[in-house]
Image 1: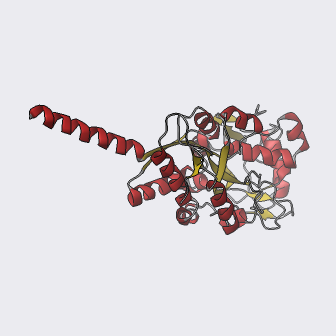
Image 2: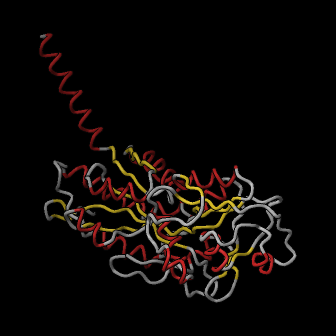
Image 3: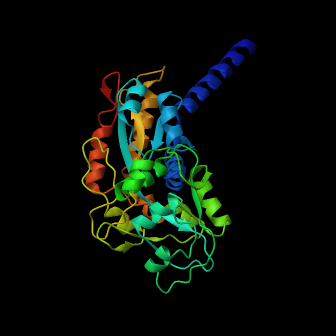
Length: 343
C-alpha cells in the first residue's frame, strides 16, 4: 500500500513538473523593448498563469540564443541578415511587436532643451566635436547657455539592435560615417565609452556630467533625462514621442523587414525602429512538444493584439492596424510538423 501511495505521489509530481515545463516560455534578446515586455509578460502571467522568462541581454545575444535553440523566441531590434538566417538552419518568422524611438539623452547643467542636426550627431560620435560650447553646436542652439565642458559620448559595448538602428541612421545621413564606420549591431566605434544594454547607457549618462548617448526613449524618461530634438529630412527639429515615432512607420513589406530611420514624414522622428520576436517557422524541433509550441504562438498573438494596450503608457508606439494584420498573417504560417498552430 505504501509503495502504491509513493508511486502515486511520484506520478503526480511528474505530471506537475511536465505542466510547469509546458507553461514556462523562455525568451532572450533586445533591451530596447524590455520595459514593455516586462509589463506584457507580467500581465500575461496574471491572465493565463503562463510564465514568460525573458532575459534582456541585447539583440545580438537574442539572435545567438534562438539560433542555438536554447530559448523559445529571440528578441531583436535588427531584422536577421541572410547570413544569420542561414545560420539558423531552418526558416524563421519575424513578428513585429511595437515601434520605438532611439533618443540622444544628455546630462548638462540645468539640462536645457537642445537641438541636434544629423551632422552634429555624426561629428560627436566620430570624435570631431568634443566640447559642448563648440561653435557648431552653439550656432544651432542660439540663446542656450552651453557649458565649456567635454562631451562624453556613450554607446553600447554589446551586440545591439538599438545600435543597429542608430548606426543605420548615421550611415544614411553622414557619408563619412557610412565610409569609415558603417552600420550594424556592432561597429568599430571611433569614440566613446561603452556600456552594456540600454540600462547601462542610460545609467552612464545620468551619472556623468557632459555625457550624451543613444538609448530607447523609455529609458531616458525613466531616468528623468532630457532627449535632444533631432532635425529630420524635412529640416524640422522633432521631439521624440509616440506620435512622431508612429509617423515614421511606413507600409510594411510582407516579411516586415524594414528600417524606419531617416523617415520622409515631414513631422516624423528620424531615429525610429521596429522591434521583433523571431521564432522558427516549424516548431517541431529539438524534442519540443506541440503543447509548448502552441503556447508560444498564443503568447505572441496576444502581444500583437490585446497586449498592444500597454505600449503607449510606456512610451512605445503600438503597431498600426496594417502592421498588426501583417504580423498576424506571418504568425499564422507557424506550424508544428506542418500543422498550423495559431487559433
